[in-house]
Image (cartoon, rainbow, N blue to C red; front, top):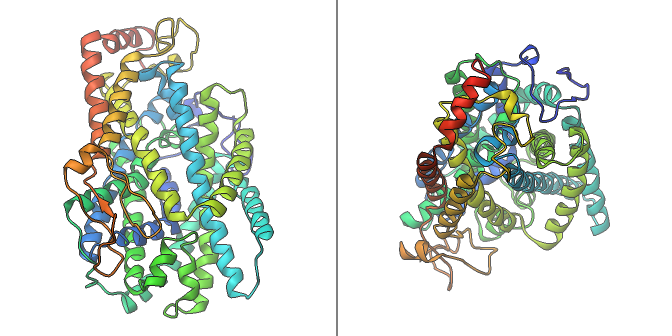
Length: 506
């Protein structure tokens, strides 16, 4: 294996030896910071304003929602202990075969994030071409998507060390662009933006949206990067640097997006924010100078490529965790082809905001319960694993799970958590682009309020949103049921004794 930049990394899901644990918690924090200073969170901030809140309420949603990055910190602590990836560690609670199902879920989810990034990359390029008075046909748009898919594969093709180097370099220039944007936001923004209200039910739905697209949506990847951190690194340092590198920049960028929305929120601009290409709002507006829009979109394209490299890297090792015999860099190329096809479909058959709302539901209903079980299992094991046993896939391995390879306590707990999350989920606005709504009996029971906050105070017929407890229900019920089942069966306790006998120092 190698940890050199711009040399193809050979490591897959195998254990990284202590001698090759070359990075430190602050380096991981810089990696996350480089990926967090990106335009996606700017767009998310504008979408939160689109729920119809006033500016002060939106600020509270953004700040509280980004506290979910503490979950990413907690889900980063197993990598240094084991030297391997998330869904190899996942064999402990779910079994060798049971874990493959969740690696598949993770692969699908990361493909969704890759598609989101490609949609925004192509959208930014389309606006730049419009500003240059260049007409873009459907065929040329498809060609742009294919080219973007090829380019996005370059950095993750080489691997972890290359990503760290490239993303760290980008922090200062991209930060500078957003500082300039902050200047315009201070000049033109409207902090007293009133919105059209929205009760606690809508507030809970907005929190679920921010939770899913902030911390919760990254927990499934965290250990893929911290496996290169030495085992003796302080846990508080890992959590602290991860949180500092994620929550702080993302709060600031989402606030920039929300502030920009306050002065770019005419009916036509709102439609653009929630349309197929959210960057279209920057093309038609006359507030931000054109030179800055060009600079902003140009840097956005580069940064989005960098962010997609994280998704492609993790999706590659997830594909390996399923059991498919494929090298990590080959998986990157395969994912690029698939995400290219998904992007072509999404750009011609959907809108960006509709795609994101559907995608948020996918994240919540499986990552929430999975995370609850994953962290509860770690705590039950007193935060210790047998790193060598996690690499074993034979029936005699500690984590194989008897003869089936499936730990049914975890599967049952996951099913309960997923059903609970789904029952407490409300498909929330912004409603401009959505011709339907969905509320489960539980979300409907806890309140039905006008959720069409983008129609100047008038509630459009049929637009309602109930309370959303999906994130808390999924994580909480998954963890609780798993705890009860494991305490009754004593399986984890027996495995802990076996771990200590086999590998007392690991």
